[in-house]
Image 1 (tube, rainbow, N blue to C red):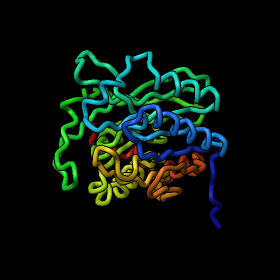
Image 2: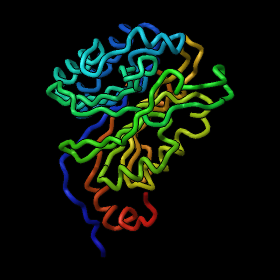
Image 3: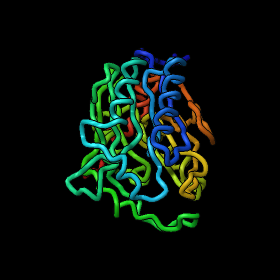
Length: 281
């Protein structure tokens, strides 16, 4: 009888935080800090916050009141202190960060290390300029946001992680590039609309996980917001085979799960999709 092989790796517990952010900046920060504490108390090593976690204004231009510079700001200070206090890696959703175009900040995702320092950041590349059959109808993110230009990956004690944000999910070439660069886990803060989330959220996340043999951690906004927007929720942790390991369908809260990278590594040996890739840029 053939024995199942398993590669030993250090354990990892990862947490996905779900929120219903509002137009009250400090209230959102307080909620995020409380949920981070909950996740850390439950044993999480890496904690992920959703897109717009600190602020979702009534108007798109409201975000200018809370825009921060690259290295200073209330949000950055609060998240740095929380990462250090809880001794965790913290992927801090997105927040408007000043660019050279004063009217179009980046939607930036910061990664804080357990000592509170910034490891890296990712500026959302694909901006949501679409027509959707919901209360908002028309979205033109590029009007008040500047797109990032480059994929970002970072190293942790548990392997390499790749970052994406929301609409990036629909562009599989981004995820394939990160996988070919050595990523084992994808992390994605998001605020999918309820309409597009119902249709495509789960299937796209599972597809990106399966085709790249990567774990996928998605942290989402959920519910009805003060600006009339309704977001899908369903924060989830998905295995490298596309299995949903944990999910929170709606409301605020935290989902956690352990990541078995030993099984993932063996799967990549037995079924070497990434080494068989022929068409790349």
